[in-house]
Length: 81
Image 1: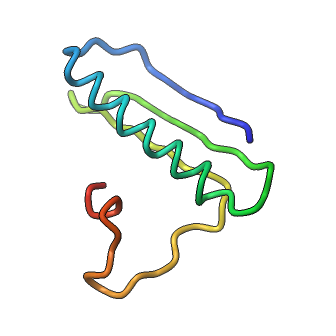
Image 2: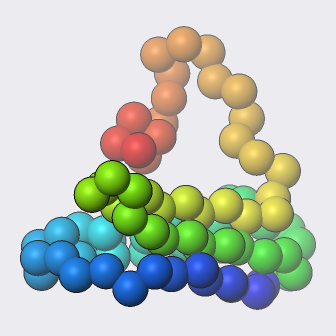
């Protein structure tokens, strides 16, 4: 698995950085566990930048995507995102 990151240098409070780190960690673990299925190769890209004073973070992988769920049947993790 290949991980690529495009990051902009930002200043933030420690609690903001900690929260962002936890979210990115969980998304990377999810990509490794589910996004790449049974493939032993693939890629995960992480982008982080500021837009109008807000953090924008994008994490995407080369997996097949999320199966469509019926309305209201989302997993706990998807609800949190």
